[in-house]
Amino acid sequence: MKHTTSVMSMKKSGKNRSHMVIPATLLLLLTPALSLGAPYDSMEAFRASAEYAAFVIDNLWILLAAAMVFIMHLGFATVESGFTQGKNSINVIYKNVFILCTGILTYGIIGFQLMYPGDFNGFLGLGGLGIGFDASDPVGMLTPAYGEQMTIYSDFIFQAMFAATAATIVSGCVTGRVKLSAFMIFGALLLAFCYPVTGSWVWGGGWLDNLGFYDFAGSTLVHGVGGAAGLACVIILGPRMGKFVNGKINTIPGHSVPLATVGVFLLWFGWFGFNGGSVLSANPAEVSYVFVTTAIAAAAGALAAMLTARVVLSKLDASMALNGILAGLVGITAGADVIAPFSAGIVGAIAGVIVVGAILMFDKLKIDDPVGAISVHGVCGIWGTLAVALFSPAATIGVQLLGIAAIFGTTFLFSLGVFGAIKAVMGVRVSEEYETRGLDLSEHGVGAYPNFAMIDSSFKSAKSEAT
Image (cartoon, rainbow, N blue to C red; front, side, top):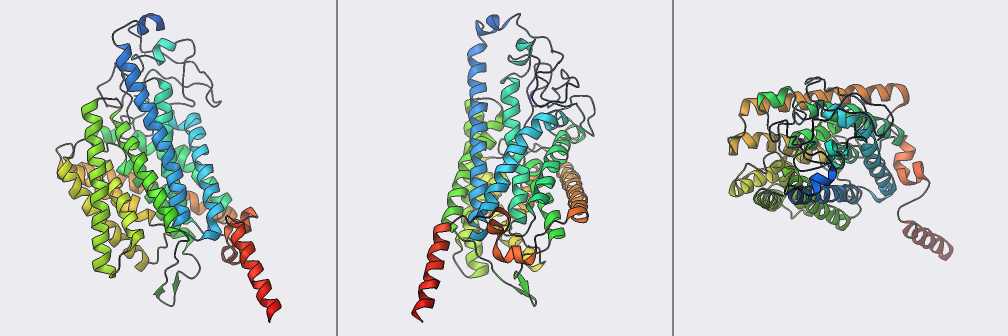
């Protein structure tokens, strides 16, 4: 999916970065690069060509899709905040702002080249530092000489939005008890090394791509990476205080289901850019097809989760319905372009059932995931990747299983090692006092809802004077 379509590579092959050499290490500097050899002598000649109008439209759609994926980060922030306690809302927002900004900058410094190394190293994914834009050769970087449908700038910003998504998923898993500094260090390292290297194995034309592993928009490469990393961090971090007491599983309700609902619908909206932009052109047939499969899977996931929660939990659980939407979206992401619309409904429905079962399973295993992110992104990411082989001829089940094992295993071990090292050096969990008080006041010195705190304090003071 996320492969620039260079005229010197097969369409969507991902083997398209051979024109980039190791440039300078400063972020986003205009660095020397080797051009593939543009079919035009100048930008003026390109603009006068018949190809220019189609290129402009395709490039514009990629930019719009990038903006839609950007909005998803607001969705992640509001979902995570709404599904957790109000006393940690500022902390949630701070982490999400940090991850988005770090993701963009880190991807510019190292991730873009690591993920798309060309033929430099198909296993490790080493291609140098920096975007590699050649200021002296705009024809080579801003015309079809770089990519059939986009400029290097559009390619980078679309990819950078995806990079930040993986680490944002981890934020939801560890919320309420993780040290902010520990999370920031871990998130930066995950973005700088693990995500782009595993991504290079497929989208960068690496060894899994050569074997035929198929993941259109990232059920495993984005969501699975976030889920696997989150699982490792949660195992090291341990559950929140009061979650598991004397063998009993206690529900710690989120402070605002309406806020979480806003976030889920923002994510659903952004997912049309996430999947639709992964077509990497404005091809009307392909983009509209992906929109339809994406919508059908999300709707089916929600209804299936509603029904499953009603049967298993004997209640109409709104949070499960919301997670069902996300489960359906994650499930269809790997095969949105190759799975038929009716089959997309089946994929989404199964994801909706799976997410309810996975959330309950992790609770029984005493793995505390406050927002259900491991279940939504990790477990349903696995299902979505396998569904490509089950509902389309795009891949075989054996290759899909191998890719899942390689990417999940690598990410899990990387995260276990890195987060474990951070724990050994500086600790990863806040004190019981901080956790009880809430991370907003403990780590940021301010609450998300100060007026509510004042009202509560005034009420207690008035009550005390009355007695």
